[in-house]
Length: 169
Image (cartoon, rainbow, N blue to C red):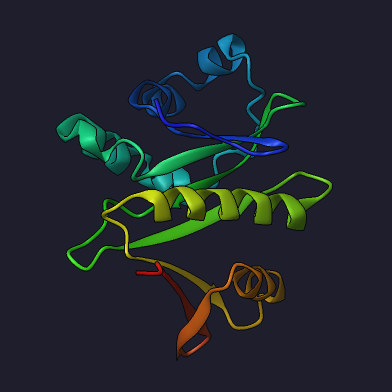
C-alpha cells in the first residue's frame, strides 16, 4: 500500500473498493468509515470520473496510485480534499496533476503541504520525468502555489495557464 505522511496529512490512493463504495454504497461507506467523509466530497468533477477510474483499476491493477488520492487531515480524521493524477506517466514521463482542497482553516498551507508531498513522491518514481498542472489566469492562489513549488508557466491559452516541473537529471 502506498501512503504519504506529512506533519498534518495522510495522503493515500483511492482503492477500488472505496471508489466502488463511493458510487454504489455511499451511505454505508459513511457509516462504517473511521474517516469522516464530507457531504461535499468528492467534487462533481471527481464524481464524474469515478466510473472511468473504477474501470481503469479493474482492467489493470498497476493503475493503482496513478489516479485518485484522498487527502486526510489525520488529527481530525476527515477527508479534506483529493488529488488526481491523470494516469500513468506517458512515453515522455509526463504526468498531469490536479487537486481540490476544501473546508479547512489553513487551506493555502495544507494545499502546499499536500501537493509538495505528492510531487516529492512522484519525482521519486523512476518513470516520472515531468509534472504538469493547470489553472486559470486569475486564480492567484494556484499561481502562488505553483510558483512556490518551483513550477514554471510554459503556456497560456486563452485564460488557461499550463505549469511544469521537470525532474532534475
